[in-house]
Length: 119
View 1 (cartoon, rainbow, N blue to C red):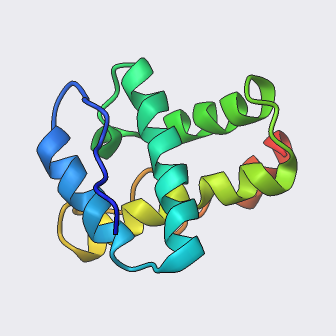
View 2 (spheres, helix red, strand yellow; view 1 turned 135 degrees about the horizontal axis):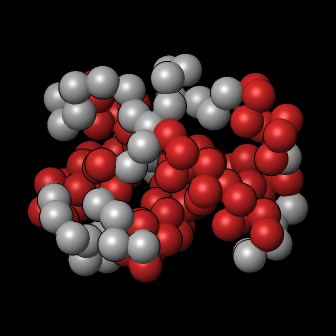
């Protein structure tokens, strides 16, 4: 397993980094590499906006979705995979890092309405 660093964030960088490592430990091989890449892109996006990943809200995840589509110009299948970062929040809830599902209210998934509207 390669050393993985969370980009600096306004706060919670140590806690966020530990949560990311815990989340990545659930994967092996190619799945782990893809998940690591997805988290890195999301955390860099958060860093560029001075947003601590553990404090992200649903509307911010939807802004991230729009950024993937409009700025990065990813195809729908890539956007869908990159949004698997929502599973990171599910892991944080399971591990007790967060007390409630974040940033969505549908068990870690972006709602169908959001997918239709954005994708």
